[in-house]
Image (cartoon, rainbow, N blue to C red; front, top):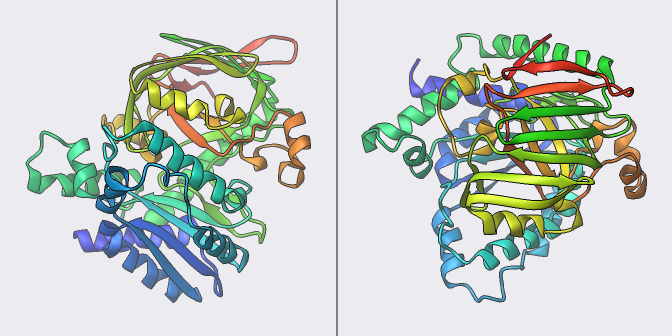
Length: 409
């Protein structure tokens, strides 16, 4: 298949499997400028399915960097209210949301950390109602990736410059199964396997998970009435969609107050245009009480200071070490891919749909069953071929869930 053929396959997967947009819907897409060829194909496929309107929001790394270099120092907590209102109104008007990633992982390296933190918090506060709908799966939404020169240079630094983008596209297509003759059928088979995993875990009703690995000994309580999710899900209108392409995880909500011990990262984290490496967190009563990092420690500390919930966990996800992305041997420096190469946790906001009745609970009710709330949600990878995970029963008995990073069931 040619690159154009694979892009067309990819666009069809995004529209049919990822978003599963319906006739009459609106589609809002955020994307880097370099994603224009992909987004054009997505738009064509969406209109062929009867979508009423597609609106692109393009972003440009050069424009973003110019802000951090030259904008007034007191302006970084600003986010336009009109934009936040418009994005929310589109979702409320039978809208779907597509996010295409691919920005330079090192874009903001060396920039003012105070400005970065302020800009992130300003956007998070303005977009809280918008993100609330996403985190409750009220609408169909999907996150995918596009190959860009800056990102490709980070992933393939030793390849000739003219080959890097092509290599990254090949890696993306393989990860999302867009290189298959019948990609939709391949996804149906994969989603069925993920459903079997989550069904098994939901039947176990573990009260906690116990992680053991080099630098890790963590007892992680699970939220009351927690529900394991993974693969396909449904929005409020009953539309089935897949929120991430690729996806290899099954996940649920930890209990915000029942996490004890230390956990160490197994992969670097690209966060806010900064790279954070070799880091660990120590938890007591569910809250981070100590953080260490070989690089980017200041960025991690500022993340934890976003609000009260930023220093607690909102997601726990299990991914086998044999996942296709892990077996590729690539470090993508992009959470969408790296989180599907390794089991991971997320600081910050919990997905309300990961608890029984969670999407209709008040904030106080959600907190009472252990669901965390925050402006932020940041995944970090802890899985490897050395991780051992046990499920803990109410009586304290432990049962193996993963050995050497692989499922035991």
